[in-house]
Image (cartoon, rainbow, N blue to C red; front, side, top):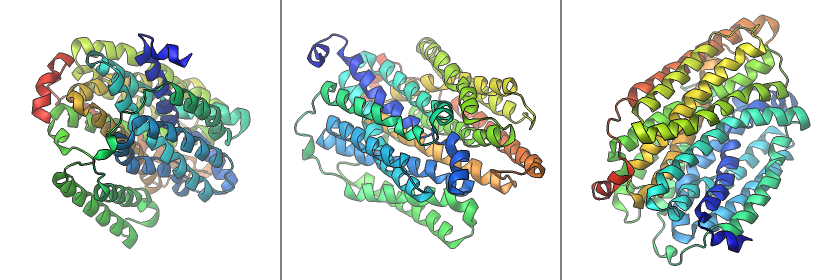
Length: 478
């Protein structure tokens, strides 16, 4: 059967579907844990500052490893790295489901993230290899939509699974998906091209980047709990910035850098990534705190939370294809800025909810944010990838994944820090509910401001390189 598929004129779309399995699965697990945090908190007796590491450790490990596995795949074969990613991700998921305590869960989430990084770092490059020049933008735009849907579907699917089979089921669900993904990818993906191991691997760059990201993001995530003037936090900040500075210096000097810094001279590319980062900061500020509001204040069950949060991915799934087609005709400017403005409206709506809100009063906020995300993601992805010459499309996709994960981490850290700074408590008593609501409302207003900032920045991308204009970019960006 697979041999017939490989000779089909639609083979590239079968490859796209295969890659989408890994992309959706790895991004889904970046947020599926969020809705389980209140349940895990009760079982393991852990506070929010500790609980957030079940999400942050996953994102942090992926962020640190994305360039490493992307470079290794260029050297030793994308199929080999991608297929191995399914194996490691599936093993990590099984161990997460067996976790006896919070720190074991955090550790196995890191193992899970290693496999996810192997999957995410290669998805765009595999698609670039298999799709012809004139269809790459469309395929990569759809990949971005799959990524966003995976990231935002996590809380909805997680809530339903927890209600049916308990919190451990959110990890066990990956086992059949991982096995199927491995078998299909092993049989269907194109074979690796020979001779990719002749280039040198930038070990210094890998060490500097991973060390810098881990140090900096660790300090950002633990600053509120330990105190921003705490010596380990200050050391983490200083060490992270120093290592990332050395990384940039190193990348300018080596013959085969891990990240081509020339891409950041490209105005649509850098503005698109900044806006993407801000959009995920704003979205994940809400994604992190909304399950606590729904379960601890409104007393909804995990199944009810999952059902309610389904409104976001459904609205996005409907809006994204329409927005993607519109951007091909009219360009991304108004759609990206408008999408971020609509998301800001959704965040403002959440800031008006009370401790006595009904089920149907909460849904409009998720619907508005889903429409906004759908308007923004596809045009923004198309704008970023259309501004890059074909030889660097794979690298550009990897950088976009990196920026997205940093945005998720930043959103989680920012929301938790501000929530606790303003007196928020994850399991409030009746007397503490007003304090919880005040802190939640303030965080939503900050997230709204971040989304509006992204909308303003997006208006400054000006130029938009359509597919037929990319040949000129090859000489400009190489």
